[in-house]
Length: 240
Ligand code: AMP
Ligand code: ZN
Image (tube, rainbow, N blue to C red; front, side):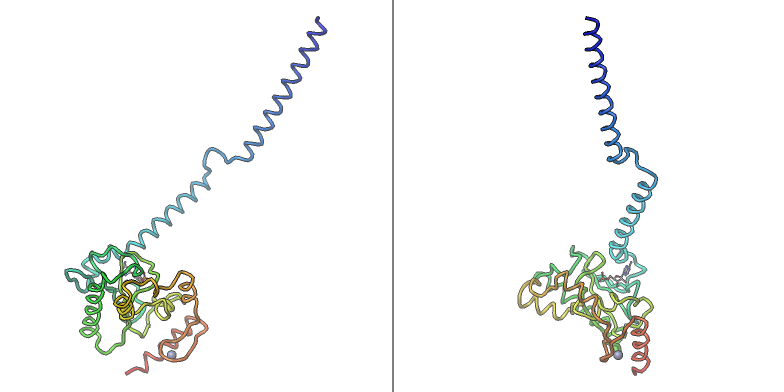
């Protein structure tokens, strides 16, 4: 009996001990695999920096909405439009015209219902140029993929001489098909009613922004932005 009992007891103890060891092994493995329940200092620092960059992005994106309500920036304001100077001008003269009421961020979804507004913006742009810079040449249009919220029309002199004109992306955003001329856009809306066939897709836009650096005033192709900028200075200095 005792032997039997002892045998049963020893088997029971040994089984229990094996089970306990297995349990400990598997819980150690689980602990190794799963992340610590407490966030480390590095995790917290990463979260803070990611939150900071998200809020910086948000701050940048909403910059124009703030700027158009700040009287210091406003060149002119009508019932429906606000004109401000671009804070980081990419040419000698660079303005932005924004509708007060339209809730669009990009020109992509403009339709013939917006034609009246667009013609109003076009007229304002032309008056601004005639009044303030009658001798300069200008481009008037939208970026196909704007970086900032609130629909804004660029009215920019074609010298493109500015310390803020720094990168290939800056240059190509104004000097390739990424720049949508307002008059072409109005024609498309008058003929088709929307911009579905006309609008470049994201892949095309990426290619436009990577195009070689071609001068907008002669056939010169620059290898770098500094050499393009030196070249643009020669055009600016030789123009009457
Ligand atoms: P994009 O969204 O690429 O069509 O261009 C946005 C334009 O807004 C750029 O030309 C910037 O230099 C300009 N910009 C950015 N922030 C401000 C601001 N706070 N006030 C005025 N212009 C701004
Ligand atoms: Zn040139």
